[in-house]
Length: 211
Image 1 (cartoon, helix red, strand yellow):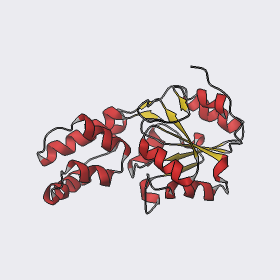
Image 2: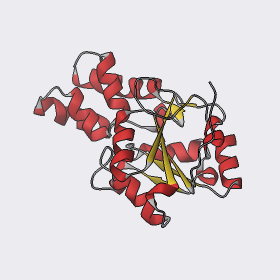
Image 3: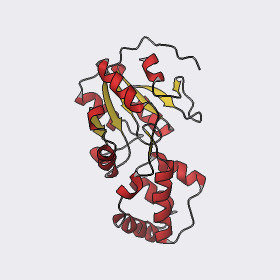
Image 4: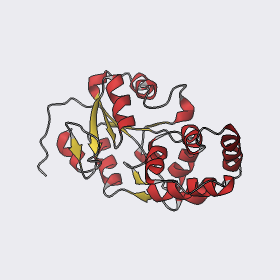
């Protein structure tokens, strides 16, 4: 696919985590399969797995509890007993990610992560030694209203004193897209053909051809 360089004055690239920095479908599937087993509910359906993949842990627990308050409380208790670090080994870093992050820094472009993950994000940063490659991380714990609300995007813009035109959001879901659009930030879809959008990349290095 031909990638056309666009006349954007970009000073910051904001990345989603799951599905963009990492292929995390297996990791998330295993985590919530174990939660489902602990509370005695059926295994996750494909639609349920797609939902939890882009939402916060709190939203995911509520969703898989099927509107049953007792089941939801048991799921929350099951999560407290789970060691999230156990599932990080099932994450797969996307190709050319570190090279792209390095080259963005060489261009003077800031790099941020905006994720609906919570406590697990710090373990991911440590295990994959990502801190030298990222200038800011915003999780669902850092804001009152996580994605798709634009608060997390605006938090990044404010921290770097950026105008909305100076940032671009790379995501793979409608949740990411909605957050970007609500903040007035350009959006680029990574790999996910299910998300209708003007700009699309299949490899992280393709981003360098755009910005």
